[in-house]
Image 1 (cartoon, rainbow over the protein chains, first blue to last red):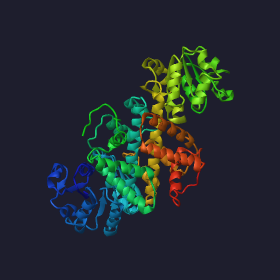
Image 2: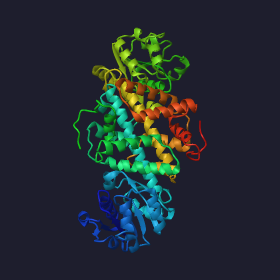
Image 3: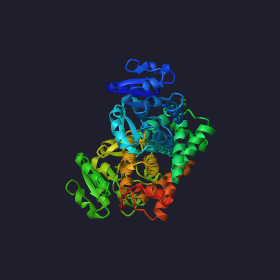
Image 4: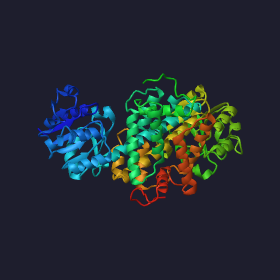
Length: 295
Length: 295
C-alpha cells in the first residue's frame, strides 16, 4: 500500500485524512494537540510527532492555520521536512504566496495547493483545489489530490496561493453584491426572500446568492467563514496587487468594509455574510429582514 | 382556446411568443416594424396595429425597449390599453419602477414582470421572472408566465422592476469581482484560464464566472448585454437607492466604471464583461489574456 501522511487534523484536515484512507492510501496523521487526531484512529495511524508521521510516506499533506504554522511544522520546532526530504510535499493550507515560493525553494518536491469549498467540500471530497508547482510534481500528486476533490494546475509555486486569493476576492465582492442587491430590493418595496428565489436561475445566480443570501435573510452570522479570515485574505490579495502595481477598486472597497466590521464594529467572528451589517452601519436606521441576530 | 397577445417581437419577444403558442395559447403578435413579426407567422397571428392585436385577448404581454416605448404602446400613439382595458396586462420590459407604478395606477389588472436570462433563457423558456402586482393577478398570470420560465411574486407594482434592478446590480458587481480576481491571478503569475476552471465548483462559482469569465479570457466584447444597458440599469438602481436614502458603495463604484467605459472610453456597445477593459485603462501597461479583441 502507498503510504501518505497528513499534518493538521482540524475542521478541514480531519475529513481530508478520512478521504485519503478511503481512497486506499495507508494514512498516518499528526496534530499539534494529539487529542484532536484521535477520532481518526478507526482509519488512520496516529503519530505522536510530525517527524514520525512523515517517515516512509510518498506524499505528505499539510493543512494548518496560517503561514507561521506551516513554517513551524516544516522547518521549525517540528522539523518535518528534514525527516523526509525526498517525499512529495503538498501544502493545502492558505498562506501568503511569498511563503509558498520560499517553501518551493527549500523543498525538493513541493506543491502549494490550497482548497475552496469549506468543511462540506472536505467531507464530500468535492474541494476546488488550486495547485502551484512543477508540472511533473502535479502529475505525481494527482492521484492523491483526486481523493479530495478537483485539482487544477494553475502555475509555478506561489500560483496556487494567488489563485486562492483570487477566489477569496471574488467571494468577498460577490457577498457585497448580494447584500447591496437584497438591501435595495427590500428598501424598494420587495419581499427580499422572494427576490433571492426569483434571481436563482437568472444571470445573478451564484453559490453566494444561494448560501450567503439565505444567511443574510436569516441574519445568521455564526461562522461558517469568520470575517477576520476574509479580511486576512483581502489584505494578502491587495499585497499581491500592490507588488504587481495593480489598482483594483472593488477589492479595495470590500477590504475597507471588512476592516470596519472586524475593528470598528468589533465583529471579527461573524460570518463573512455580515457585509450586510456594514451596510446597516453605513445607513443608520436601515435594518435588513425581520429575524433576530444569530451570533 | 385562450387568446393572448404579445407586443414587441424583438430578440426576447419573438421566442417568448413562440413559447406561448407552443404552450397552447392562441397567440397574436404585433411589432412596430411589422417585418420583424413576420418570421412568427408559422405559429402566431400577425396584427397590423397594437389595438387589433390585443382585441379579445385574456392576457397581453409587452416586451419593448424602455419606459418611453412602453408608455407609447400602452397609452400613446398605439392606444393599446384603451382597446382592451379589462385584460390582464403583463409588462415584461425593463422600465423604471416609478413607470411601473404609474401603469399599475392606470390599468385595472397590471403586472410589472421583467425577466432575466437573456435570449437563451427566452428560447429555452427558462427565464427568471420577477413579478410585481396584486396576488390575485399574479395567480391569474401564472399559467401564462410558466410558458416562459420561472415566475416569482416579489411584491406590489414596481417591485418586479426593483427586483430586476437588484438582479442587474448583482450581475454588474459580480462581473467586476471576476475581472479583478482574474487580473490579480494573471499578474500574480497564474494561468488565468486554469484559475477560472479551478474556481468553478468552489464558493466563487457563479454564472458570471462561467460565461463572462470565459468572455474575458477570449476578449470577446461582442454583446450579449451591451454595457450601455448595464449603465442604464445601474443609474436606475442608484435612483431607487437615493429615493430610499441608501448608500451602496460597490454599486456606486460599478456605476462609475461603466460610465467611464461608455463615455470616456467610448465603448457603449461592448458587452458588460468589458469591465476588464476599465481595469486595463485604470492600470496602464496591463493587458489581460493573449487574445485579439472581438468587437
